[in-house]
Image (tube, rainbow, N blue to C red):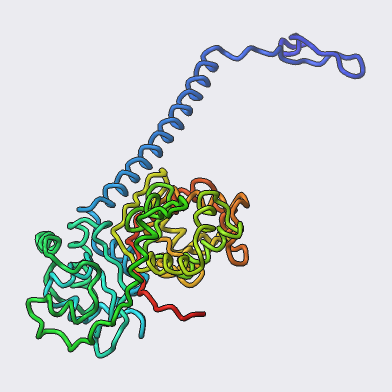
Length: 409
């Protein structure tokens, strides 16, 4: 037998012993190397996670910084505030929204652009050979002088326009001008305020405005002998609302009247509003509705729910296909100004908006046509509701609706 065969043996199945090696313990240094490698991997993962978190924080800070009044470029402001109506190419909408590309109101005197942005327009305007029914909001309460100058400069130099910049000093000077009490009544009034009126096409005369009856004010400012609450005590002297009390100014008169009727019948539930609505006769309901539809005070709404404004903007403008959520503006109209039975969303107080979304989702409010809002609100998670509510509060208020004479129907 050789020396190699003389070592330890293991019994085989036939009783014979076969050579084998005794198991040897793993050397201690190998354990230390394995532990060191594991710790090194954990540290790499931690540092990578910290880098991701830091990168996200820096990106968010850049987004916040870019949304500041000075650093936000005019093109961004234009796409956020103007492109829905005036289109990305500045061509407007045929017969509905005047073009910005090639418009003398844009390329003429720089302060004319500032006057339009700060006061809005409500009345006929003639641009590029066509008449339009001007219905543009004012941005005075939602854009700073620097932002107005940024977006004004952009539209004066975009597309085929080749005009000089609109400066912050120009915007500040326009803010100090006496200006109109409300929006410009149309192109004629704008031209008259210009330093070079001969540079514009002839403008149509302003459309007559039907004023609400004089006794409407008593319904707003005074309590009735029976103890009825005045609307202004909650909704503000000009319908501007506050916190969780909705803004009524600029809402469609038909919509306001329908909501008051729903409060009367109990289809929409809110005890204080039900008491008020039941104290008003049908004529008073119509007077109030037309009064508030004709108001357009500056916005007092501000985001305050901690929502993500960029996410809110996405939901409002394009929706979310992955969750089968349509864009808010597909029903509520360009810039959230409201269409028919779909109310104005722009400049509404976020606490009120999110409360209504929560009520629709929970089934506490069910007076929406075809249950559409109930269906949509249920698909929005809590953060999405806060985000879209905060975003809508940053939009400019809708121009005042023209008061219409009662039809008797």
